Length: 282
Image 1 (cartoon, rainbow, N blue to C red):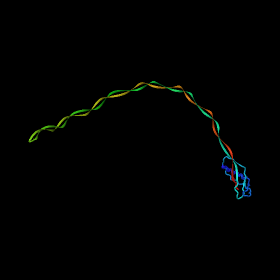
Image 2 (image 1 turned 135 degrees about the vertical axis):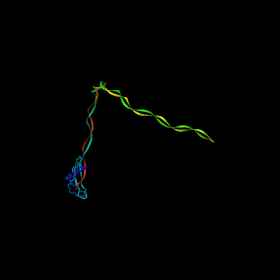
Image 3 (image 1 turned 90 degrees about the vertical axis):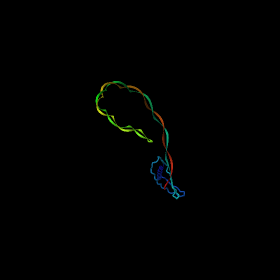
Image 4 (image 1 turned 30 degrees about the vertical axis):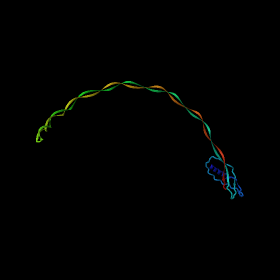
């Protein structure tokens, strides 16, 4: 607003400077009126800047009265009146009716027929001939020569020298006292060397060749035909009709009226009168 006002004042000053009637006024001190003043120089116009959307409407050109040229003169001012267009915005809510396509889902059940291949397993037996290698064990004897160390015992006489103590009895004089002596038998053992013939048995091994019979087992295989029963499983398929329930979902749209509040903004212009005092330079 301040920026716009500066532009408006500049325009008014230019217009008034071009043609404004100026008349002389008598001062309170009784001095005579002076000649009319020259037109005031135009004021400097502010640079044009973007402003709000306002419209200035100027009042009729007023008269400017010149003051007497005396020492008590006061600066002359001009009263400028102008109209300013001020926008006023108003917002109101209004109802708006509109149609909406609302989906409605429905679920139904229907029967569905289908065919199933069902397997049937059957088991049977069949004869199968096969060959078996049957072992036959036979036991025989064979002569086997071998050398055996056979013990041989021999008995011989051997002189064995030993020392033996043989008892010997002898009489010995013993003093009894008081001049009496007596004889007493005393047994003594005398060592003697004795030689005896002792039998001694000795053993040594003599090699001897022997013949013995050793059992020998042999095996031979004979082919034999045998028959066995083998289970055979067969499968066959049978078509079987079955019924199942299938869920089917359908959708259809229903128109539904709805109301919503929509903001509506209106603009109106209000004119305001502004008055501004501007000094006039001599």
